[in-house]
Length: 292
Length: 301
Image (cartoon, rainbow over all chains, first blue to last red; front, side, top):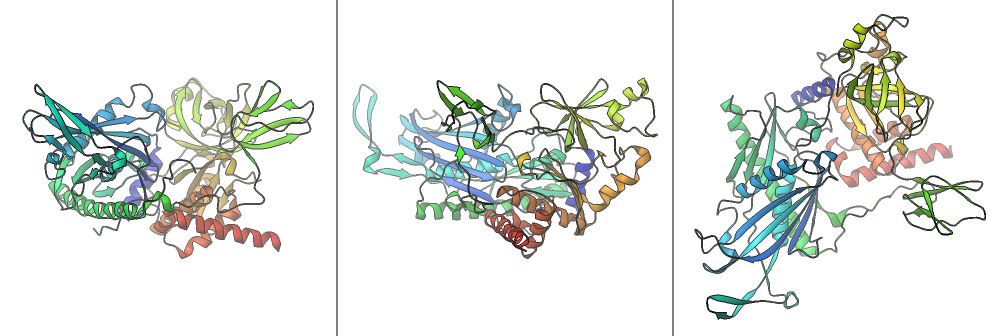
């Protein structure tokens, strides 16, 4: 992630704090910072969400396109992740600075959604072998304050929950090319997606023998290794990744402990996120946006 | 390890700030807005003229001195003044100088000749010292210093030629807007709760255990360049520091001025909440309101 400078003394302070289970902002090692969620704030997308996790700020938008299904899975649709690291987040992202991170994050997200159990791609099929929906999931990183991928995965799940796909009907075919008609948005004939099994990604940072949930940017700078685990609401692990140079495998005990902790945290995160999305869908509040 | 519940709120529940207002609300000018003028006005900082009109170039409040009209921005980088106490981070080691990030527009400089090197005031600076510079301060180190000079282009030159300044040891740095730091005679405070704070005029606030600052004063002969990385801060002190950090952020979030009294009051008012509760926005506003109330009572007395 974005590098920040820290002095040796600050690092020592963070390290000793983690040993005492009192972090710099008073949290214990397994505690998340408060999260703020907003749905449907991008008007010209099919679904959108913004997640603010303390200083980390992510905007996710979903757009639907009609595409040809992949030849090996003719009755399925497509998911396409794209991450944009805005230079607003940190000057390091200026120009091509954020490109590598963006590609890594996008690859990680598409890996987490690859299994059929986390997202059922067959719901995106329109006509088997001929037409399907492609969901373009665009992530914009507005601020980096640690635990970026956690916020992105939450935003993605919330944006998918907010997404409604217009109904399509075939009005005719002309020598193998189909003519499709999209239902008007005004008709309200739009279908929600099946998002409930989508995973949340949890980053665990290893500091000595302790595991940190939701590390701040300062804490991330101190940690030697990180483990990212995608956890679906039914306690299944959809992906794991160890970014950077650090290793988790030197001690198998800690790796097993990390996986268990990640599943526990991931389930809590999924439940809380689902509750917040439900609340939003019943309240239907007007968008607040970025001002104030 | 026990996993605590995750707190996710919706944006519609966000509290509109400011719930706290010091006195009557001043009019805010947005960039491009017309500023009412008087005959023969003079154009000050933060404004520009378009035809006959004077317009704001930054978001802020109007300040008028006789005929000079300027707009004081709400958010800005730090504009240094001679004598200010600042907290800064070393970003580069150069020939005979360190470059320090002080949240100003340009990086500040700390000359090798304006620090106290081990061995007393009158020591000559040799080429050996130049080679040893990274031993005293290296990239990432935090220092407290005083603004010695402001150059023509606005860059600051710092000095640490007093025992109270120098390298900072274990603690936490909190960043707030520079405009929120109240200018005081003293910016070093040892609080009754066992922590010490340095309120840098540049908006960098350093919180450390009280022993951290005293220790600095004792280390006279070392010129304030020693750090104790072995010593572990006790858990109780750590909790005080974490609480203090969250209180300062709560005050800054409600745009309240930071000085010793406001910080102590906020700390005392926060005692009815747990430290992690202080991260919640409604609790933060609550603490700021309670502090504001107590400060008003003080004025009334």
